[in-house]
Image (cartoon, rainbow, N blue to C red):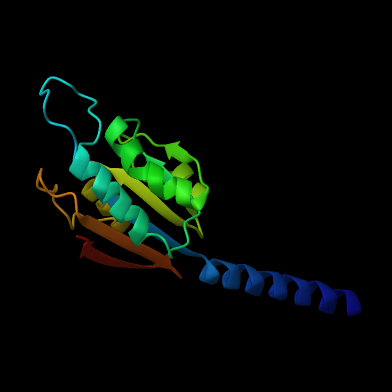
Length: 168
């Protein structure tokens, strides 16, 4: 009888711990588009940031100054990496490259579960990433000149919350 009680207690305690563990995982995604890019060479598919873009990258660094980040992701383009770099450096994090064609994969979900993550993308991939996390089509592509939007999506206890901010 003692053995039965011990096994039952262990099983119930284990189930309760697992449920509490799931409930305490809070994942927050901060999604931004890269800062302003150099448009002087229309044929350049991988331009750097222009002066305004470099200023905006510093503005993003300042914005995230007091926000805990566990990881910083960017696509493998100069403009996204240059936008992410000041933030990543200020947090002593390496920029991790993600594939914009494989948004919110199971591997990405698992790697970022319970963390605060910045993802730097593009006018089409940033809202698409937000939609993938939300599981529905809520956001259209950003206007080409819009580099100021911040999508904040938080997953907590199986619920998903979102904010869309403009940071100038």
